[in-house]
Image (cartoon, rainbow, N blue to C red; front, side, top):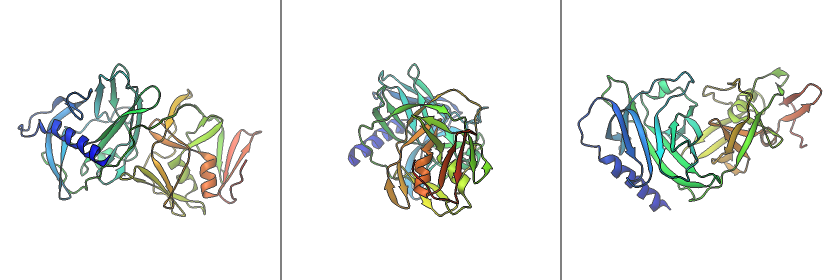
Length: 330
């Protein structure tokens, strides 16, 4: 498997290397094939400058150099467009990061007419990251049966302002992670939860969803909500293992965007989260879904793991989270 992964990296490098050696030129839109010219997948890069070999922590990697995109009114950045001739391709799932093994966002979107714009939800401030980061954009492709049909190795990007002419050289290079050839992904309908939520008596606004009769909350929102209590826990991302790490007893470190609530009332699509989950270093199985680029976990699962109370007040239509008591199963 590892050999196959490195072969994919080599193929991607060979495709991109075609551009190396060309003189730097004004930004333009460029189409680049992925894996090889016959793969059926390409990316269309606006603001393309060139492709360079970049030294990162003593290693040489090949990176696409492009102009820094402008922030859209939605708060997202459109990095490139993915196009495919594969008729079985139905959905794209991605976990973008930096070469410091740090996940900086999530992305899941349907492919329409063979195209999809890659504009992930970012956890961190892109404007702060862009000055000294090499970005890793990876994506996996699923068919209508939610089976993975293509898994692409991360594509490296460096973004420059128009006046810039150098690229960062101090960010470590990630080690490719082995993945299975076929991954089953479950797709569900998630309905916005209209219930009020109290955390230790305080009214807290969450963007929560009901899936199959269970309430799912954004993981980082829950961590933020119980920080400062005896039931606090930290959330970190391990890009090398494609894993979410939960550490009990540690205060949560905010990344921005916590407790953001949209005004949407329509049902949305939820797909099974593919990341491994570790609690205090031990891998556990928890049902989680990616909704709008964020990971949502069953509230009662998190309550059980970190032993905080969860009750339902039907008369007031409210969910009560109480960190002063332990978890009691339904």
